[in-house]
Image 1 (cartoon, rainbow, N blue to C red):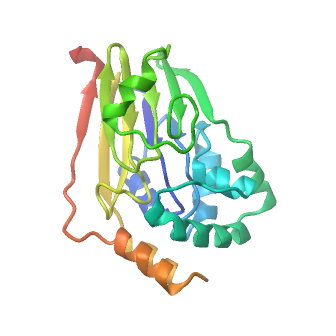
Image 2: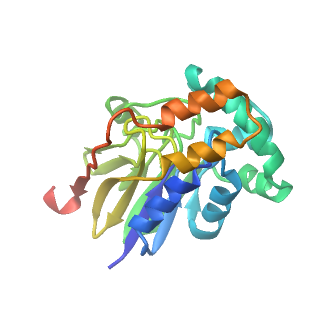
Image 3: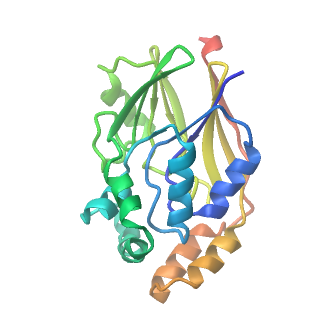
Length: 244
């Protein structure tokens, strides 16, 4: 039985990543839809896990910004947090690690389980910055010759079928917008995708942020976003090729 772990948008949040790995200790293949760095206090640890364990990885807009010292063009409300944490992360990453981010592909095509996968960060055509909702996916996939498309960037889980093409966004491991306090990811197994979420030690992430050389308003802004306002609900969404 072959199992793929699909992660995206780790954003330097090691406790969130560790919670995913504790929930999914066994997998045959791991892939990452980009944005390993920025925001969280553990960019080195997250990058090294991706480099050592993910078979396929694409570059996200934050990876691109750190590697090439350019604008990440993120959502306006998060821009101050991105700018401040990226300055810090640049001091933590080695030249070799920055080179790894720089050399990540924009689009990755691979075959697994006799199915063709296309993976990108924000859009299937390789735009790193555009935010696509599930309602906008169809207009971007009409000419794709793949069975499955994996996207990240929005920090919101989603999954839809368009003819024979399945589009999956696993959500964000490290900075989920739809479920703060949970790490989001997806599993592919036996021609079936499952969107999953798992709670993690948010306070550990916050405590490590508070020890970072960051402006107080940046730490507080990220803390407010990371900490759930209500007890998060564990939800699982499944799509199976067998039901079509």
